Image 1 (spheres, one colour):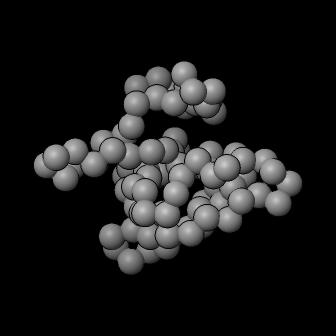
Image 2 (cartoon, helix red, strand yellow; image 1 turned 90 degrees about the vertical axis):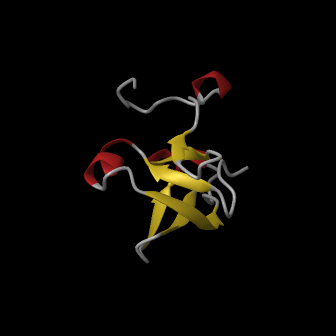
Length: 90
């Protein structure tokens, strides 16, 4: 089962996020991995600046939209069986 669904806000993870300034986008399509490797599920992400990127699950993190419409990284999913895949603790 895909980790993200269409319409969810996500942010680039790790080094990608650092290189692109923590860019936040919206999931517009989901392509599950044919071998069932969920870390390699592909997501097409649309960004506010008209870019669209196709990224794997491990390259993305959840984002929560607060009442004042700011985007914030969601709480760690490590307790739900996810790993940080080498990310430095925040």
